[in-house]
Length: 291
Length: 344
Image (cartoon, rainbow over all chains, first blue to last red):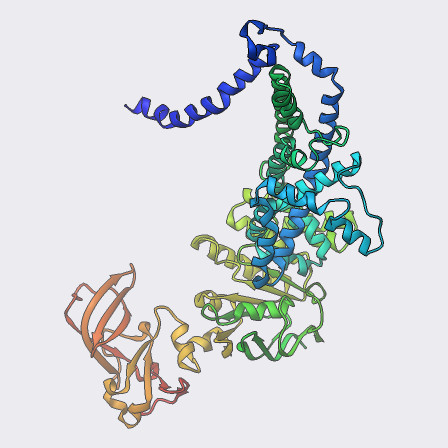
């Protein structure tokens, strides 16, 4: 009895993992090595095993490289920006009078719990070239209005801004909690020892929060690689494919053109990239606890 | 010249609560003053005010003869040790010790030499590469002490530095602290809630309650000559017994307004002098503490604790008469709590 009770306890979780992770994963892996497309939907006789041909196709596909570049840009710019904003707001919230904390915490956290599509639609209005509030404000301070979603460079920036704005509240809550765990005596001692505000931040706060920042970086990287809804709603991948993320490209290939083989290969590539990043981060020393 | 002087220091926090009320005392150079009181009496606030971590509402603080009210903590020539050690968890012992010197941009070679010298003095030289989580309680405490010593302070402030240690370690560290105080010759202010610690460490003891100084004196005087009921009750363990005047018929003239106190260790099983007084009651419980027994008797509904030599004849629920010398009796004004002369 004892010997099977252990496996029995993990069975429900394992079943769910198998059902929703392992089986689809294997299915996609299989699909990525076939020519599955709209003709196969018409007749399964058209289905052939084509090995790595889809991957080879992607390797020569300009759109795939551009999607990789765009997604990587959002990850590389967005993750540090999110962490920095999370940290700044967390420290700000912990240092202001308690009665204002609730207000700011709510205001900063609200985007996290809002539906991404609703957020993206609101931002589409805010960024509208002619009627948008953003350009309205720019004009008010005598700066030129910008074609936010119409220019390839600006569109990537705009999407990164939206993604960061939508996501930083989560890290802020976690970091604020972690900051509260740091005993105030450490700062008392620092003041007695003559360490200024800057030194307190860089020598005490940031190093002690480093493990938390590392965890958030891991979560953010994983999340930002899966960028989809923001470009889907804001730009549909345009202009000129500049905001086409890997996931959006996969969706485009799979559900617009019914080229499931190619789309599956893209999904596999994205999976491998994310594995790589997770592995890299696991082996980067961000934590003094482990050191 | 006094190395530390507090002159009519008040601290009023928002809401009008007075945390420190007219604190006025001085410690001469090299003196070890312990500050004791129940939690919430303001002793930590007092220490933090001296350190400059909190501002005082009025009054002056002098360190080494200079008024320091307007100085930042790092300019006050003080060092502080906290109850939870307050070591930086992400820094090694070496980095913890060196942090202050580095912050003051002392040359690297000087930092190295001074840290090593202090580490050797405190027996930490083998631990310099370790992180705080790899240290025992005593080693953490020594590191915190070392860090404070490296500041070369005029006044050394200790906020319950031993209360997070277990009992055997605590007495060991207490001895080390005393030795350290002797060899460094610094003025020390030692805050604790533990009256026995305060008495054993302090050359003088400040008893604090509700933000007011109740008494400043040598440990002997605090114990033997308490100026009010609070000090009498707070200092000494088990605490002093308090009796109504009527119980001791001998002093009938002001029984209405006087409360009498007698220390448990002054109650005796036999009469020793002809004018010894006595009180009797039913034995509620007998606690053997090895070489001494602690007996609780119920007298007139009141409870008395006595410390007596072991006596096999004592039985629970039996009647017992306890004797004491009249000179061991303290009297306090029932309304004000101040000490009054015992009437005979």
